[in-house]
Image (cartoon, rainbow, N blue to C red; front, side, top):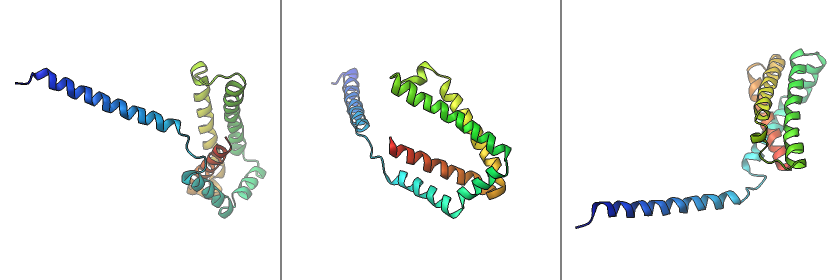
Length: 155
């Protein structure tokens, strides 16, 4: 007759080796870099180009700037602050000083960047709402994703 504890131990060992096999496969997949230009990136870049062309995006932004929009100026300042924090993290902390885990050493930087970006997005939506009304958040999101995917191709 089989002992009750033995079969459970064998099953546990088999499950452990199966899990560690999955973990090693996951680690191998992590090491392989994904191609920079893929369907996802190409889609957002092309969508951003289409929005720029079909909705006269640059012309509308230029007219909003010429109208001395307080909301647009505020959004631009907030976006500049957000980008300053991002460049500080990437260029100075990571490249120059070699700190790869700057979010651990300087935990306030990521929340500050996030809050300023969200505030900038709200300001831009308010500034451009008279132009595209309910389509404004969608158009700005498409433009944002297109820029992010274009930048990701560079580095």
